[in-house]
Length: 532
View 1 (spheres, rainbow, N blue to C red):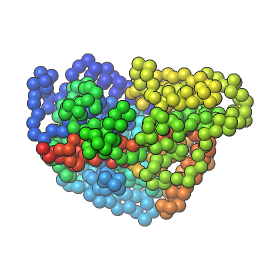
View 2: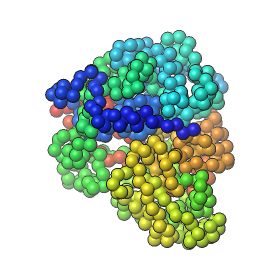
View 3: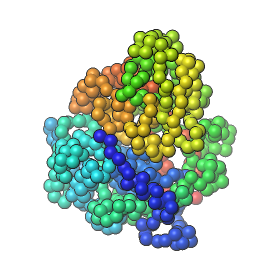
């Protein structure tokens, strides 16, 4: 069920006019005159949509949250699940019960100890309908009793039991094989009840547990993180991390030394990949577990007809698009599971680029002929009427190859991201980055009937059955095969049009060490240090 997050919209209407108060309680004049010193990493950034772990669903907000908050488990740089606030755990023989043993040296930023009851509170708050979380169902929904809280029938999660201060027992509804991976997502992170209940704008002054604290934030200017000296894990070597919020052209700022790390776009890719150029030795490239795709609104005409979906999918020359639009710096996507993800199927049978076949699909559809199709609108996020180059190219493919004119309705990016279920038109240009390296994170979350991440409202009983079987299958090879069968059906049915899998290209100054983007597109800033 879609939940409205009207509170966040109100916060941003207010904060657009007022200075966002600092955690230290300082005023604007102090902020302007204050100086930070020591080892400072300067980065380019954007304002977070929210710093509430229960509400965050965009990568910008999550990037900050991962530095400020923490959960029971996390990932290492190889994307294996490792202990975090929980130092160890046991799993029952039937895989239904997890007993987590928490560290006894974890403190909130204000000095209060973290106990098992704090996790119980945090999860029940996230699942409370009044919180308005769009991610609680997706990432906590396997726990027994979560549905009752989400539906408003209960205030407590029956499957979460506090045994003592540092022991938490969690019972699942069914023995899914990806539960620990899900607990790495921010909605499961621990928050401080007094911090949250004391102020409706609490996340502007967050009392987290992560390796950094929010030192200050002036919207559209700077956001500053300060090292948390009481962090229980590997303490940060940096004193501060300063994010320059949309402060200029990122590449130019890197050249002039205003920032220490830079994302590289198409405009500068040739400069940085030139072996004899000045930037080549500062370039780092890595795959990202992400998919960009066209998502159909499968709940209304014309894309409730699978043959129309197939026709639109078959009329796009993706090889040409990846070459001409991206100069081959991304990977063409014929399936849904990204390259490098467990379960990736290099033998997947894709819908080929075939214009004649596209017209055959239309002829066999309920419309019979291209001229009978209604007006078609694609929804996209952005400002000022400028749409992405790839979407413009896709629309041109449909115009040239099918003779169909597709118009674009553009939404404010935050409205687009958080309200797409209500705002979508006939189809929309969408992207998904892995939250954890498991095929369920793409196939079930994006396409299972009733999933809150299934924004296209696709329904297929056979796919649902395969996904349910794959989730509880203990044998990894057998589970992978079930996921591959489900993916093949989704492609045959044109549940979406996969376009490309992304790669990260970044520049890092020679004096910055330990800055490593993992395949989830995130970096552990507490592992970064400067050598000048």
